[in-house]
Image (cartoon, rainbow, N blue to C red; front, side, top):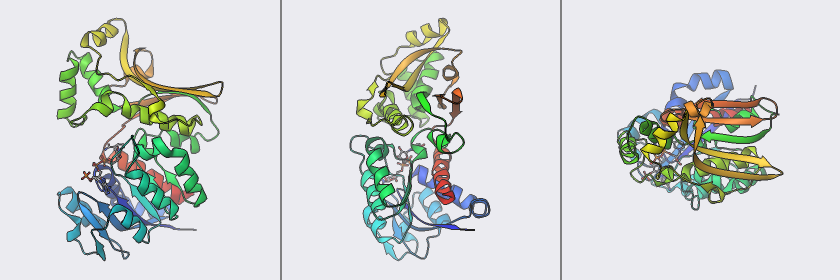
Amino acid sequence: MMIMLFELVFIGFGTVARGLAELLLEKKEELKSKYDMKYQVVAISDIRVGSILDGRGIDLRKALKLADAGENLESLPAQRKGLSAIETIKESHSNAIVEATWTNIIDGEPGYSHIKTALSLGKHVVTSNKGPISLHYRELMRLANNNYVRLKFKGTVLSGTPAFNLFDGALAGCSVSSIRGIVNGTTNYILTEMEKGLDYKKALKEAQRLGYAEADPTMDVEGGDAAAKIAILSNVLLGANIKPDMVKRKGISSITKEEVLGARKRGDRIKLIAGAEKKDNTIKAQVSPVPLPVSDPLANIMGVMNAITFETDCLGNFTVVGPGAGRRATGYALLTDLISIAKS
Ligand SMILES: NC(=O)c1ccc[n+]([C@@H]2O[C@H](COP(=O)([O-])OP(=O)(O)OC[C@H]3O[C@@H](n4cnc5c(N)ncnc54)[C@H](OP(=O)(O)O)[C@@H]3O)[C@@H](O)[C@H]2O)c1
């Protein structure tokens, strides 16, 4: 029996990375007994909580406790401190990188450079960062293949809820012809609140108060986040080669309470739908608010929940429903990616 030993580096140690750290600690024994997977964290580099590298291993429990308390990791014993993300990737003797810095869908940086550097050095990469994957999927996959390593990015769509990874596991051999989904929890929450009678501005304020929406909500409410996700889904499942700016999109910021309530009266619900379809070898992808009859499974997805309906050749239509964000749910996505690498 072959044991996979991950010598892990965390690049970005915020919400999601710490969700993974927590699960790695919690499931250490199970990972070994069920999946023949062991790990040692050899570096963490984060511009907010500090940077430490130690080939003999870092005490992950202590690092997590410090970061959660908002304290600097550099108070821990380590061979090297203060290295940048790129220096950390280059100088650590690691075989896998967890990339969980911020999403940038203009040029994919800094995640794009982190992932490129790691793959070029023959290190596996798991990431929840939509920027580099939605913009540079083909190039990065080629780089991974040329270097005989894996690039996994389950957490970029629907966090830990199964989406495209279904099709190389449980649904291997099944082909997808179209995708329709609610892939942004913030906008779905706002539309749900508007159905209760709030106007758009009040619903957005409530989403911000609860931490579902950023202070600058543009990426969510104008459909940019959903466009990046449907671009990733289209490229992976439909063989497309599109970038987020090629996705036709309309957000929800101009939707009125009257429109939402009027749709309800007609037996519909307005949902922000990210869709993509393959027809005659061309792929069309778009994001827009659509009135859906309540008989449609997507019409019944409320609050921050996400869902995707896949149209397939073997199963017809089926829908997956689950959380699309959160520390533990997205940390779990990174864990499933590591397990999938260990299994392969
Ligand atoms: N949170 C979710 O539920 C969720 C769900 C799905 C996908 N994602 C994606 O997962 C990624 C991580 O999300 P998150 O919620 O964990 O974000 P986060 O809490 O903001 O954590 C990101 C961390 O990376 C640090 N960082 C930024 N640039 C860096 C650099 N060049 N080198 C080293 N560290 C750097 C940040 O420091 P500063 O804060 O100082 O910039 C921050 O501590 C994002 O791409 C996000 O879109 C998140």
